[in-house]
Image 1: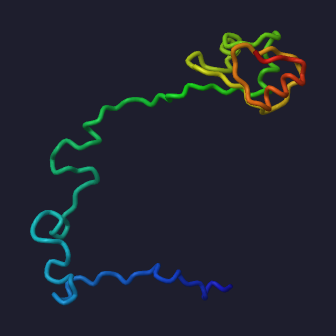
Image 2 (image 1 turned 180 degrees about the vertical axis):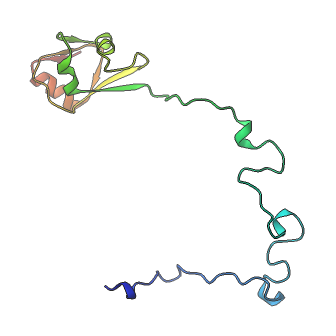
Image 3 (image 1 turned 120 degrees about the vertical axis):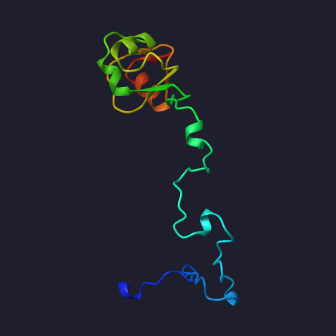
Length: 141
């Protein structure tokens, strides 16, 4: 394959409109712009979102911050090693700064390794995380 032999696919290129070339072309006289109005004139420009003087949509809608509907926090398996104590629950994770206090559900994911026996209480865990915790001598309740 050579760069000078590359061509676009069949039917991908269209010939450009030739406007103002007589009535027989289908785009003569007004050149497909219709009669009168701002868009028919040369230089008839308005900014994006302009609605003819009406209050535009982007100004009618209230400005609000974004809050995720799913307040799920994820904790890595390797982060559990740093926690002091065997019993790990929601309060212990918040005190350690691993999750936000606003989190509704907490899930331990199987990233990293764990060699310490820990007991999870009231916390979800993925299948791989459960297997790693149980193999280290811990439990998931």
